[in-house]
Amino acid sequence: MTEKLLTPDELEAALRAIGAERYHNRHPFHRMLHGGKLDRGQIQAWALNRYYYQSQIPIKDASLIARMPSAELRRAWRSRLVDHDGDGVAPGGIERWLKLAEGVGLDRAYVESSEGILPTTRFAVDAYVNFVRERSVLEAVASSLTEMFSPGIIAERVEGMLRGYPFITMDTLAYFKPRLSQAPRDADFALAYVKTEARTREQQETVLAALRFKCGVLWAQLDGLYLAYVEPRLVPPGAFVPVQQGIGR
Amino acid sequence: MTEKLLTPDELEAALRAIGAERYHNRHPFHRMLHGGKLDRGQIQAWALNRYYYQSQIPIKDASLIARMPSAELRRAWRSRLVDHDGDGVAPGGIERWLKLAEGVGLDRAYVESSEGILPTTRFAVDAYVNFVRERSVLEAVASSLTEMFSPGIIAERVEGMLRGYPFITMDTLAYFKPRLSQAPRDADFALAYVKTEARTREQQETVLAALRFKCGVLWAQLDGLYLAYVEPRLVPPGAFVPVQQGIGR
Image 1 (spheres, each protein chain N blue to C red):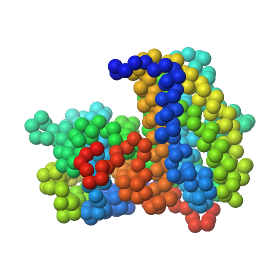
Image 2: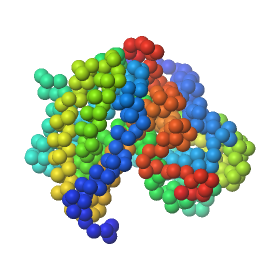
Image 3: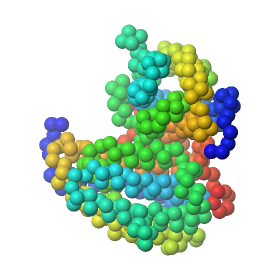
Image 4: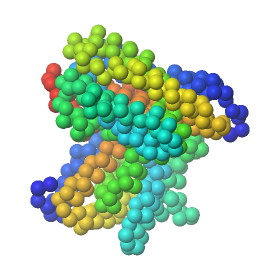
């Protein structure tokens, strides 16, 4: 790299530009989901597949904590484990997502088994877990920065889904409410970290590449859903097949 | 597992049944490719993405050799490295695939960079490499068994592509000719290995699951190509965009 170091604000602007181009709010599947254009079976497929992503988040976070050098950093990142796995009293994000899946008519044990998910989902999510496990702490932190863009999509999603689908209630969408405060808190921390810790242009480029990679992880999951359940409805052998007008698997 | 041990022939029959259901010759993208239904840009996308798969094969094979306990086994598996990486005189599979990519109008350096591949391709291929690296030697060997089904698809492909596309010559397809003898040799070895080494029903189930997994790896790659380049032509941000009637990028 011969280019000069970006200022922290330039780095942030470059990160935001990646989000504007690549964040999955721009994917047609999300536009359909939020616009009330999906049927119940398609929403089930989304909830089922997305559960696998949710279920792996604490695993990737724990593998990152395991490599963080200071108690302060580990403690800050630990709040993510609490958010997702719960504290034994208040339900965590994984439990709330299961409620969402049940709320749209899926069987809890089937969802937890991950049996019916698309191979594309599994590969994309596992790629994320492996990325966090194998890359530098800086890159791993940077890969979480899609959360900078999530409050917008969540607000749009909750509003759109409540309006668009009579069978979806605020209760079913309880997953999202805490995320509106958790995600910005986490994103602020991670953004401040990469702005401070990326000390060379080369490191800054790895930060940008990590965010691009993560946008690909989210985007590919919607690609899989779109192909299998919207158009041309090419469900891979062994994956979930929605029951017409039915409940569950 | 309480079910009884399968005989070696029953295990083989169960493996063949998985191929009949899940091997990627059944994917619509392949039916179009072999039926002369794709345009040059779509074939370029296929060649570009598939190159990444080719490029990772010796890496997964070397990681498997590194865990094999006997010289005999390592030596047998080493022939795969020779086939893909070449011997410095005769070109290996990777080099022959680059020739194929150039033959359909792609720039060699662009293909080698893997810059324009679909995230779906990268995640699926990396999932395969990680599977081989992390699972038992038995499962890793079993995951190679899609080669049992490849001579059929190769014959169909070469014949169909020569007939269907005036710009494709036998020379461009030189990749495939050695595969017609290499793949059955490799598949016979791997099949004999799993038939002997899977000594419990549980191990046999891991063998079957490994082949299902690998079929998913191949299938997901075609899913990605179909979505991005056939229908609904949803190219993810940053991925290869064919030039209309043009050459390369």
